[in-house]
Image 1 (cartoon, rainbow, N blue to C red):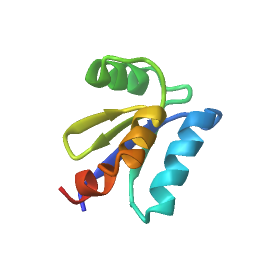
Image 2 (tube, one colour):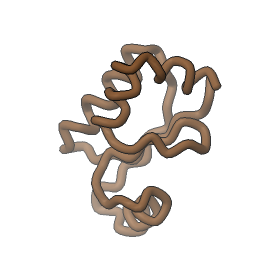
Image 3 (cartoon, one colour):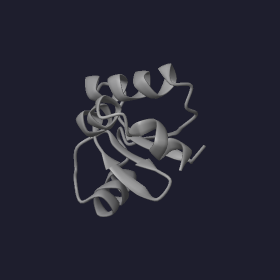
Image 4 (tube, helix red, strand yellow):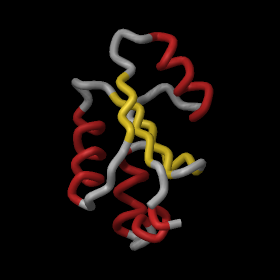
Length: 84
């Protein structure tokens, strides 16, 4: 299974939903919390080209946010992406 990284914030409902989907699928992921950490948020923004959380990577592929993750799941593409 590919390495999954989730930049998130504790208070963000979209972050919670994205993590719940990954947990439901049994996917281990690295969570990088950006709350109160402007350097980490800036790093995330530079990599993703977005400032909102969550920002999710599967391997070296930037998936996007929560809606993007769920769209991959609905399209039946997330499992294949995770397996690589």
